[in-house]
Length: 182
Image 1 (cartoon, rainbow, N blue to C red):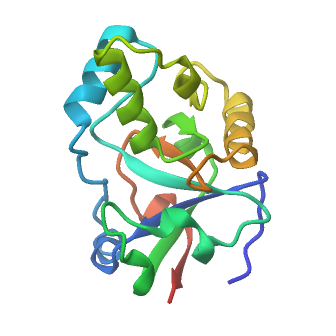
Image 2: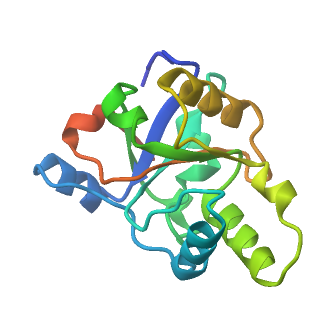
């Protein structure tokens, strides 16, 4: 599938086939709540250093030289065998209706980063180095958010992909186009 990288990156949501069908039927899709949600939410609420919402969609931020179907972000949830089967994906529009609701980006897997930060905080260990791997985008303008998303792709971490979070569910109106990986 040939798609242009308008902003210097693509916002890609990997989906199970039934999740794509849900969206095509006019319903909204959100990711499942994380096991670590309470710990992360506690850190977020008390420290006010990073936003966290239990209602979110995980977005792979794919750079211009990356191939969507070769992205490690293709592993959906805890299913590490996800690369052995067909994966659906949606490329999101980069208009205000999407960008305005992205409040955090990371240069690595956000679930792991946020879990490690909250765990270290709970143990009274240092976590600033992990915090620097994220961008709190709540107060950013559209232009600053686009810059932060490009930063995430250029500086991807150990998992070799960058992630952002949309703090709401997605609908068909958010999707620029669909694709799949075999």
